[in-house]
Length: 98
Image (cartoon, rainbow, N blue to C red):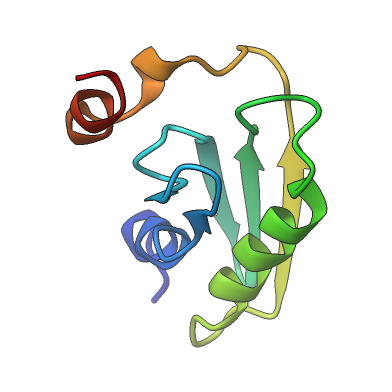
């Protein structure tokens, strides 16, 4: 059975190439909804003009679809609340902000 934790674990393999941290630790994933074989990921990006937005979304989708039993993955990009560094894990904040 797929759990929210297993989906987050899969997504945590996606690294933001601009900063070198996974997007879960960065706080870019706002929610995961699992319904049968379908997963919906609600996420944001660090900036609206992120040049890699399509690629990052595809990486998330690919990571989730590797989970046994998942046949569909929908990505919803939202801009509210706007991402800021306070949403990141303590480790990320320490390494990025000192």
